[in-house]
Amino acid sequence: MRAHASLLHLDLDAFFAAVEQRDKPSLRGKPVVVGGVGSRGVVATASYEARKYGVRSAMSTREARSRCPHAAFLTGRFHAYREASTAVMTLLRSVSPLVEPLSLDEAFIDLEQAGLPDLEVPTVTAFAEELRGRVSEVTRGLTASVGLGTSKFIAKVASDLDKPDGLVVVPPGTEAELLRPMHVTVIPGVGPATAERLRRAGIHTVLDLEAVGLDELVRLVGKAHGTGLFHLARAEDDRAVVPEREAKSVSVEGTYDTDLTDRRLMEGLLTRQAGEVAERLRKHGLSGRTVSIKVRLHDFTTLSRSSTLHSPTDSTATIARLARGLLTDLDTSGGVRLLGVGVSGLADWIQEDLFGETTDEAEEPPEVVEPPSIRRSTWAPGMDVEHAEMGRGWVWGAGRGVVTVRFETAESPAGPVRSYPEDDPQLSAWRPPVTEDEQAG
DNA sequence: TCTGGGGTCCTAGGACCC
DNA sequence: TCTGGGGTCCTAGGACCC
Picture (tube, rainbow, N blue to C red):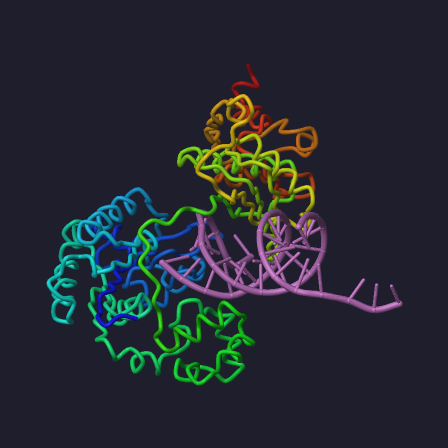
């Protein structure tokens, strides 16, 4: 903990939604929700107008729609968000060499190397106020909330106290009195599970937490977490601002609108995801030794399996083969809502073999498969033998590499639903309905 | 059809080595 | 028959963050 409030936390207000409102004037002053718009989507960001209706981040889009049906529901334009974020981070780095981005819309800055004449409260306050103005300039009108304090923890708490478009400085020496009345969840790392454990022990506020001994806390929440809480409850935090963090893993996952049951389809999707992971590894000059898959079952239980190679890889073929192999282990008969592939144990080099060649098989770049342009209600004769006998298939949905088909059977016009990878060769057999003209001809 | 996606860190148990 | 530690690596799961 420092003698001066020289740590700054900056947080762009309702970031994704604010970018949308900036770029589309008709959305200004109106509720805007950015997030997944599918049946299993969740809210990433809600504008302040939408928050008035109780719409919150991480809420299901379904729930958000019921709370605020007239909001604009947008899927997100990450290029625009990244561009705005880069402008802000570039500005921050021009102001101090010690900038630690936490996400697209948040960063810590250490003002000790920002070249200020001193670090007294009036000086850092004026600096922060000017910085907020410049953020608004480089983003063409976005607002930021800023907190200043003697540690990362305090700066972050401070930036939250006057959102949106606010500035709060916590003067050195006043940290404990600020924190004591607050709920324990103000402490980073205290989420629902930890809060519940603490609640059962009669600990609700930071003041309560301060009264608990180190041994007792470790017994309650474990060694690392317990010692962390012990110190943060006393506003003791000397974590440094770390400008560059190396990635430790790269992963891709997807949640599907309908649960998957077809193993072949799952293998196809893992293969596609392996390709995306490998491409990102190569793009960043990385390779990794441990390949993992993640499988979320219909009932939301989440399984993971991993396998570690002797030397790192960035090869699509290797990652895909391992990922598919890891799946064979698992019982997915009840249906799968999410599949994912990841690589960890990263190295910024690729193992070379005895001949000085890389171990990466000289592979073709993954084939880019365009989603088939299938219209709703396209007839799908001869999709496969089983379904051809059933009769007509109707495209029920397409996206995320999956085409879902509802089949009409003799018993029911809305028969079983089956899903296929969009690059499934069987899909190429699809053709529009045979018209009466054609039949006549 | 309640519950995203991309991450980080921690824990606990087992294997293995000295 | 009864019995050591410590350290590292790997795996699976869970909590948490934005």
